[in-house]
Length: 218
Image: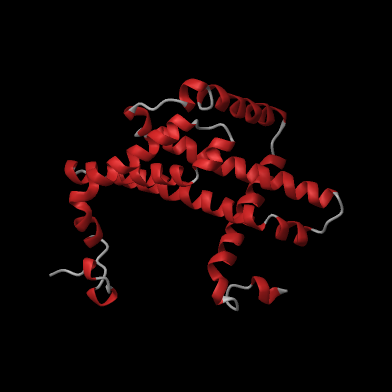
């Protein structure tokens, strides 16, 4: 069994195994934090979850298609936080239900394996966005900062659009808003287009690693 989960002996599936380990760590942290809560902490937790329904899931917000809102980093971060938290809670509840029914923990984790990968992906998306925004705040050049802000907005909205089905199912967004997000993603791609070559060159990818003619400099 160890060979099935040991990343050094399963190189063909190392990414999946690593993602499962990330998800397991996130769930362990969630369980640990929740178990260490006292009565006041639990009240605050419930209150914070309730606030989401008033501040993020009310009809005015779920249907807000204004440009200022769609490009607001707080909207992006809140959406990422919500997705990560809800997936962790859902997977934790499902595992508990399975183990309470008599299933061993190993089989329970196998059954919710797809949710485990969702947890890891949601966590990584959130960390990337957080670190991206923190780094942008340290940039002094106004032009570079503006370009990277648009790139961060594109990443955030593209990720939300990619998971729009989940957000719609959880009533976090409404159809009118997902359509507006798709349009904004296209607009941001157009806005970033003049700087695309410079952004790619910033990665300093060696010419020897480029095979597509469009990527090669003339």
